[in-house]
Image (cartoon, rainbow, N blue to C red; front, side, top):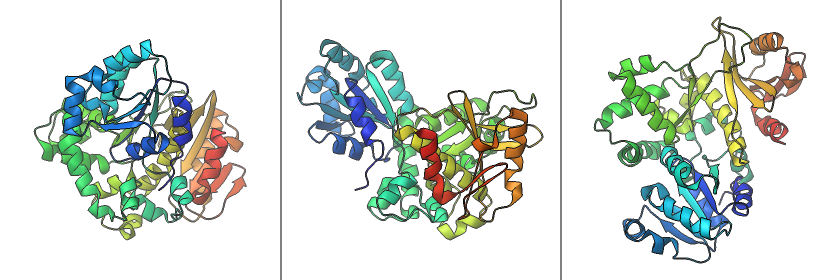
Length: 391
């Protein structure tokens, strides 16, 4: 069993709030996490038709079924429960009464904002981080393999090959999860749209381009992108808003929460194909940014992340805002360091008057060292940077 780094935050918030919500992609390990963290709580899954009927027909009795705390899995399946939980926790101020989970961020947050605002702590659980895998004795140094395999727990729990996991994950996601948000009749076009998104991983997102490639309207493309975001398939990294240069791009960049899923959609069949794929640099970039997002979320923090790019092609892959400080991070898939790796960081440091001590390069080499333009960090040392930034 792989220990999740978010566990301490989950336990801490259960002592501060009557309700704690854990959201994240389907099969990211939410159920295992909450059942391990709260072994004495009664567990109910609303994926079970019988339990769902019980909760729907008599919500008050269902919510009072246990006096030692309840775990309610996939609670968005019975949205009426949120209002009843509000009434119960307003009468009884006990902390940690309900631990609720869900894999549909939009449906969860919509109901939480309507009924449980101020009464609930919200945590997000993504698939395994590299640190979690390493702590479990799983070698995290083969980056190409990690990119291809992704980080969904089931792959590691059952030693599954990604080609035996992701195609079925995608099929189940479209046939079940997407219907909870919006019933899409043309599922084949939606899957094509999903593959088109994978082909644009790490790139500026032009909705018009994606829409025309799939033969759908821009309105439909926007709607489908919101579905992918709400169900933790993709996220959009926004350009940094601080105006060091008026000629800045305004489009976001598209990334996947899991590079294994993106690799499957790109048609990769084994990890040996990863370094020769046209999207290799973007997949590595996506993989590294995911590690930062996971570290923030596992500590209960909201990532304040951006990228920066001007219309002359100068770009910094990741800008992390911590209070009023900006931390620029450049990401390179190459294993051999060259001075060109610092070109964009050096440019950004000059126009932003940022000190080079706050600038970082992450690349696949084994050596880590300091330069006059910033810190060079081999990927295997990424946790050192994560610890520095989140201490």
